[in-house]
View 1: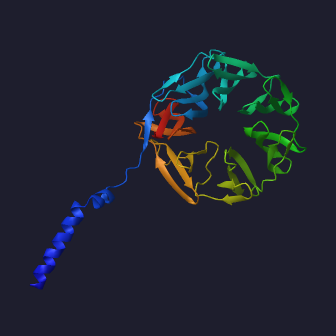
View 2: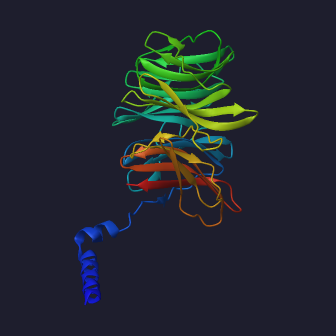
View 3: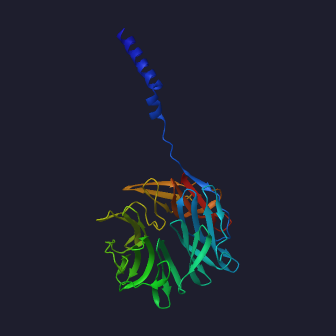
Length: 355
């Protein structure tokens, strides 16, 4: 009798668990969104992707250059939230040259444009495209940064390093500290808060513009290291990514500044180039990494000390899929890069996560 009673009690408990709304909810597996492929109108291969900038889910721009019969030609694509389309309405679209860094400045889009050996900043506003010529021609145009009220272009001419500063009405040349040989990149939060990473006579150094002068920012970089990128965030947080070399072997490092202290970590990313690293909508750091699958791109998500990886969609007959640039687009991540299919030269690809 006791055995029968025990069987009945077990059956009642089991039925209650099956019928319970709470148990039904908790039993459902979580669905994680995956990367999906976005069609991109083809360019003339081989192509080179320079940058990707997004202001929201329905406004993003990708820049680069394609191979034409007479040399390189600028390449510009726009994402409207539904599809990628090519823009050929900007000044110099049909002339030799290329497009580099792209940034939103308020409601406008600013892009560094090299054209016929010279340089200019393209600006797209509600009235269309316009151009701001640079005050001089440089041998190389290394990087560009823009914020409301200021812009910088860094490069070199026959006399050496040049830092060109635009205040909205005129250009001036800015001096850098003694010993600075080359500026590898530049970024800015405001007109009086800009940062650059430089090659100097004593190694890699981070510089800061405070509205008056460029000075050594005293960032305690790891020994024998370089810098790939520096993320300035409105909260005041700074994240820096680069590579450290030990016995000729490179490994990726990340440095975080909380407003008081720099902290260095070495996530398991090998010798990944961190130049395309962004802060995702989930608060984690995202960056494209070298894929171990020729037919799929690969992405790393870094959240504190935890690193996870995800793959883009499979691409038929692909022998190399590379996401070159990432950008946060609202609640989604957008990537832009190249895909090489067997028997052809690299052309364009784009992928999206979430949204």
